[in-house]
Image 1: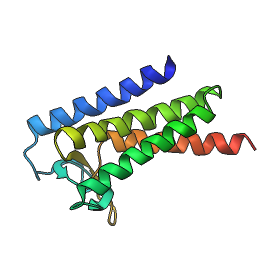
Image 2 (image 1 turned 180 degrees about the vertical axis):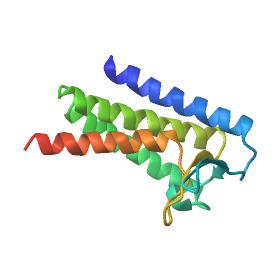
Image 3 (image 1 turned 30 degrees about the horizontal axis):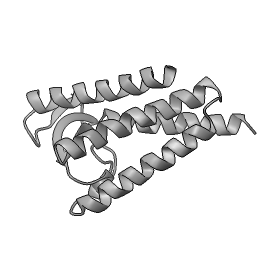
Length: 145
């Protein structure tokens, strides 16, 4: 039950945030939030992070589906494990579903968070949930040793 609730939460928060951005921020516009450090913007990303596979949608979708299958297999191995692992997997599932949903429905993902630091990509809340989920799983793996 916990997995379903957290997955749904991450998915819906991601979708709501992207809808608000598409509705209220014109494409390629930057709104400064923290002086010269953090911006909101609206970018259509037809690839993965850093625009990887931008012009190869079939490969991107195939890799995404393969990643889902691997994630489900990993999750099944840790199904009865601790709450930290369940939360980590749930956040990854929710974020991945959010971006996958956009890629299938719109053929692009809306990215809108930009931290001005070297070559940092523009990202969205689904990416944040995926990153936090991975960090939780990494931390859990150290604790088990």
